[in-house]
Image (cartoon, rainbow, N blue to C red; front, top):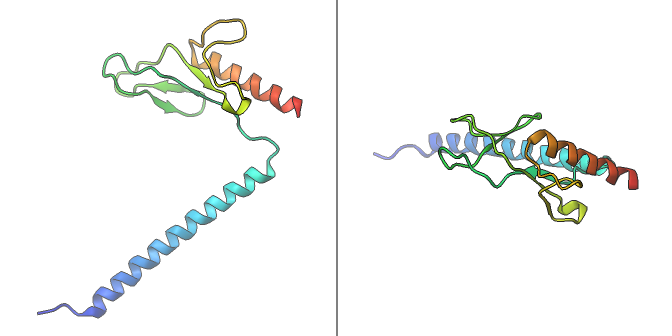
Length: 124
């Protein structure tokens, strides 16, 4: 015995409506981001990263936002070396500050990136 087409079509319509609503929300979010980027005077240039992995499990470190940096969530280890991806500043990858000291803490590399962003803004 075949299942009625109507019950399937109702489910299909409901499913399609949910997908359409989801896409609409994603499009609105994307457009809002584009508008904010266009209205803002500055774009966040550069980013902090590390090439190291957890010495215990050999997995990539997880980035925790809000000034916390990188950490292995399982073993609570942190990297000992960082770099700035400064392609937006047209200087490639930076592994040390202007004095030649390597970026050995998240705080040090974050401060340097903020100095670079500030200098870039002041030059405009």
